[in-house]
Image (tube, rainbow over all chains, first blue to last red; front, side):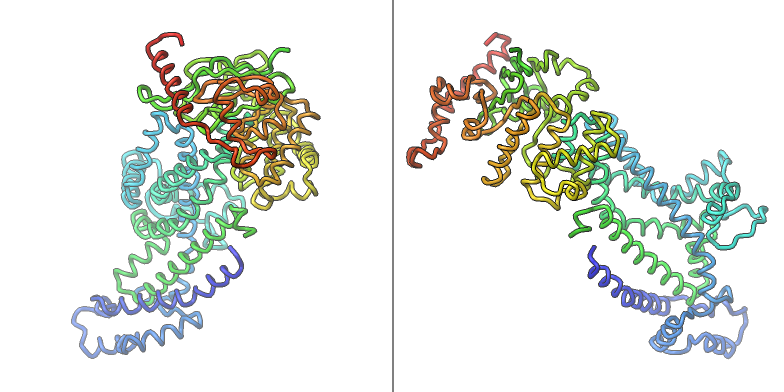
Length: 335
Length: 296
């Protein structure tokens, strides 16, 4: 990717976010559901309701509300959560690391698993065992992440209770963390026992997020591997006495990764979106789980803050994927 | 002199059982140590298939139904795979047809040459890189140290072919299969590449099986030649003899269809369709005999 392209993409970020903000803001206010109705005790007077409405600025015209909110957001003030009575910015910032760590772990598992399966499938090309790989991948792909969450929870949490099924860390463990990136922090500071305890909690939700994405990676990459292996450079490598596994790893895989990342990279956003339901199922304290509560409570400021956060993450992921493709393909680097 | 390569009665069929099409029908070719043999034929004659069969590069749907391929007296077809892999790239090398697609686009030129050297000769990374630079200098690439660090798309087609030639000669092979190595190149580059191959052959002492449809190239660099059609050898001998006194009518027709500097263009005659037809019907007659289990 050239510098001009990068600058163009960065310049497009503010209008994109403004658009997302406007759509969410307006949609929240025109669909049925009223945060004030959720807060008031039974039997509150009409005057009290009107006062509460005015307190949150909800009595103003929507466009005017949007202008006020946008102005605050530009100064870094995302408002106060109606249901949690705290600043939205601090709430999201406290929970975001948990989701990022979970999504990262899920992505790592998915990429490793998908790559291994794709390589095995490509190696078995033309043999009967290839069908088994394709069938397994198809099955993995057909089951959505939240269903995997329930299946894994039932299998490894209930029927065979080997792993914890809720939360981010054992509540009996009293550990102080300097940041909210618990896993990364404990790995960096060498507290491996803490990391192990965290991983025990994360592995099931991470697997649930990873399995459909792993299947996607496996399917895409396997097709690209087969195509790359038919190219002259791979054939010629065989005539030089290299073994098939060596050629697959050294010549075919680096070439097949380029279109796979370009096509499949943005699908990580699906995995990120999956955190909403999966975190809920495992009571994992991330922003996905928080988003569900925010919606249930019609917590307008919190919903807006969370959607903007997801939007920023999606944009960042798209940029990262394009950069990665450029990094993998020397023809684009010099282009 | 005993042949370094002896292909005997090679039959190759492509496609599934029952629908298989024969591409080689009992082809036999000998290459003696240090000689350059031209393997000539039109498209579909089976000349590239023969080269690929020697290298074990037949397409997945092709099967060798009969015959032997002996290299230095040992049958490559009967040899276990790992043993054959030790010969390929080291004792038998390939100069591929298309320099634009035969190099890995995401690996640096130097790394691709070095991989062959460390794989077959066990050179360390540093040794392999130094030797790769020497090889590039040997194929007349200027600034070899710089070219080692370039990717294939950063050098010209002629240069890529030089890199592929350097890789073919890297381990001092005794036999090189050159699969139409000049077809994809400009005419001016073609000559330089042919001269380069000839020079390296002499200094490294390798034999070359030169697969081509270009009789001009054969006349220039091949001592002996084999004419292939429909997977059968029609004529075989010293290049000078075959070109001066072709015995088979197909060879005569091929020569008449080849442009030459000492002959006006109007004298060019296409190979007569009737001749092609009779050759194919003979080939199909042999197929039927073989299917019936009768000796041809």
